Length: 396
Image (cartoon, rainbow, N blue to C red; front, side, top):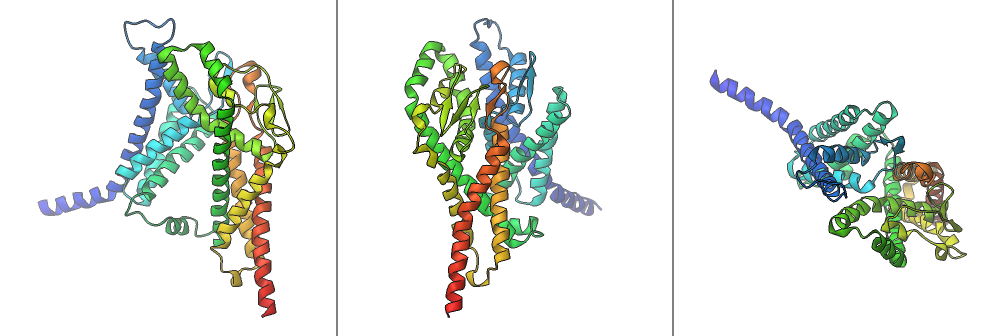
């Protein structure tokens, strides 16, 4: 009897082990990422001019850190009549990376662990947002951010384990109902967006180098001290990915705004008063406009061409039909557009009251242009390659 009971307990433990590993992985990610934000909030409050020296302001720091951590998942902050919707993508990236590390170290490589971990993350984020007074659309945004950050971290961390199945096998299992050529197009769309993001990062580095004198002047005028300097540096790192996303909008054509009635694009700059942040010294000035800058959208077309090359290498040229190319091209364009839409929406919005209610790019316009430009590049490669194959077959 005792042996049978022990065996039954062992079976149950084996069944629940994957689920518990997913919960534990998410717990590590949430605690680690929140602890970093909390530490930043404590340092900022201790360095405030009216801060007392008798005790650490844990309560106030906890409220600030909780709001910022949720904002990193797309949950708006409302304070003093102003609404903050610009997502500090660096905080979201920190949470995703922390969850990735937790999943890689602790999660069992199984769909149950991924689903349980992602579900736990969803409940934690939506629950925290609801306790903070968020309602309606704010909760929907919290759910979306939780799925992207928590679910993405769990998937990436689990697949990074040596015993995990190959990405292609997982894709086949989860998305097997979709035509293979469409799945190939989706992968090509992600490749195009990744290449465009890499180019945008290099462009931001160039902007930072060109604007280093302005950034130094802003930093000197602020004179933040060592505590304020730490807070300023970390907060700007949280916003640096936003600048990279805005650079994508600049390359694609429409540009972006940092304040109402401002515009930073390749065909002109309309600037205005800006917040005293050294990072904003990297915004492109008039020197980044002109006839040469108007060729910037060609970069997006080249990223689409890269996606076309990568997808064509996975096709069997002699078996490809025109309908297959249509599925591939549709997957590339739609994926590139949707990913761009989400990133631009999160990276922009309202950064406060007054002029700062308009920050970032028009997400719909940028997404549509990126999808169209990527489609052109991919179509040139795929249609050209397919035409050459059929011409050779006809000659033979």
